[in-house]
Length: 418
Image (spheres, helix red, strand yellow):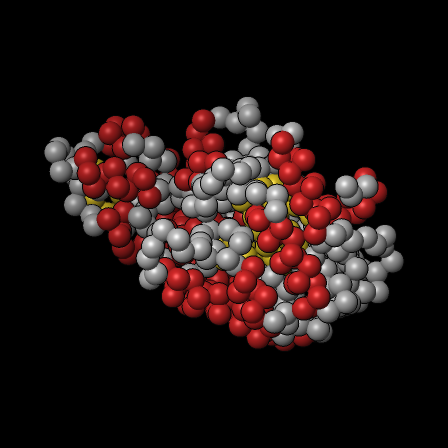
């Protein structure tokens, strides 16, 4: 079993990766330990954003690469440690039996070479499945420049894989992570996406699951000069071309000091706005070009949906009893669930303003952009609308939910209503 000193080093070294917030896997128990089906994985979060229901650990923090932003880079003077495949497997099973965890997030520094590191991680997940009979959720972080066959084989045993893009441009990647390049990250993502697409067409009970929870990636925000517009365009392309399940955004924190890196934290508000815009890309039919200009950032004073609506006031107000679904989704304060409820309910009766409140529409925001039965309840002057929305935005808090959060806050966080 791995000793406490090495466990502390390897788990603390893994906490800066945020790409592990949900399961989405269909892998089920076949007589062993664990269940990675959607209902079998639930997550809790610490105040700094770490997911505590997965064992989040590095295979090794001995790194041959010298990424300037990384606390485990080759030149860093930090304690080093590594774990064998059997040690990690024993730890996962022991923690699972004690109900500490429900799955594993396994990453690693590049220990020796990319292929050697990936081989160690592959051995770990194979043993966990075949020797220790563990059927719980496993998220594996791929190693750039490793042999494609190693990544392909690992994808047959894990639920999700991720190769971190890190920076939106190759220029910044080469400057801050000199041993990496665009192809070392995007090529594995493309190959796994193609294999998953081919695997989706196969039938039969005996076939192996290939990445049932898909792929994710992560970008560091604020360590390089790229704008939100550039970041969102890259995210949009990754969703469209490779069917990624999620792009994670990590606000830069200067845990490492270097002349090429900013001295100050990026701040959670910029990260928060990117997540809001990302939600609009995936579920509301917006494009990156509509949300942020190529050379600009998302406005901080409003959420991205309000900002878009204020730039397009000629389209509003819309009548909730006749507006198409696509337009209802673009009204600030009407989320996806609310829009579908409106479309369903108005088939039977004309909706009144009071009816919208029961559908969880945020009326203090939506009333400036809609009419109900021809009646308008919002502010008539554009300046007043802009001021009211800005004041409402200032009341927002950017924090993790607790057990004592209000039902309204919890519902909004779970459904992404904007």
